[in-house]
Amino acid sequence: MVSRHLTAEQIAQLREEVRRQLAKLEASMVVSDEAAKPVELDQSAVGRLSRMSSIQSQGMAKGLREREGIRLALLQEAERRLASGTYGTCTDCGVEVAFERLVIFPESGTCMACG
Image 1 (cartoon, rainbow, N blue to C red):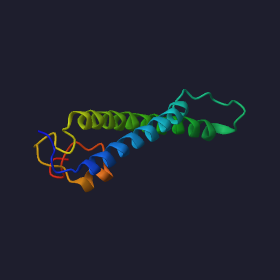
Image 2: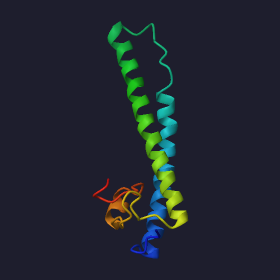
Image 3: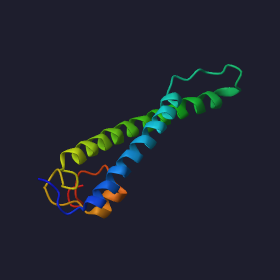
């Protein structure tokens, strides 16, 4: 079902927002990939707390990287829907997704009721 409730200007605005979010996310993923690398324990650091802090930071970075991977897939799917003309239509029930929702969550594929 092709979304007809969005104007050409709105589609262009949303397409640009998806691209902007993708670029921002890809840059962030480079940083989080680096932070998620295995921890090299600094033997000169005093005490277990320093080592535990390093391990905890690595765990948080891995969690962030996982969430970023999910969002990346959603944004890439939004790009595919934009290209196919189905962007703005709920992937679950087929109703129109509000422009305001898409502005806030450009990766959203569902309406408020389904999402």
